[in-house]
Image (cartoon, rainbow, N blue to C red):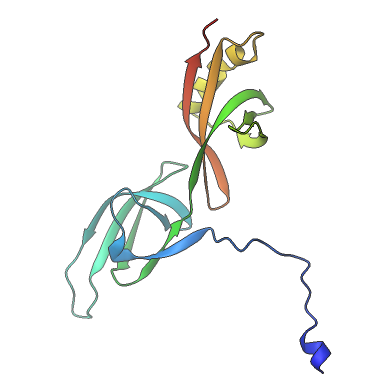
Length: 165
């Protein structure tokens, strides 16, 4: 019986890092990140209503999805917790492109090939300058900021620097 209680299958394991952390709604501020409807968002405005008949002040949040730019709203009691995404932004140098994905290199020289070329203005800026990066010798350096949150990663900023000969 004792052997049966301790017979566990550990075939799958993870580091245990959570995609989000809880934070009380009343402690959130403008420009903080928050999860609304399962999406990582940046708060652009918030207002608090007075304590009502049932005892809870409500916080009205208006936020923009950090990846899609869509506006989302949430109404939450001020004493309740909301999820805050664990987001990181890292710079990468663009080495090239293949089939809609960027070849990137971080500051330690490690490659990354799983970041899609963004749509819209950022993607067009990268496409317009890729020929300069892939030229021999290169005439420009493209640095992108890749933001990762909740299992997604997207290019959120592009910087083009000419290379002086």
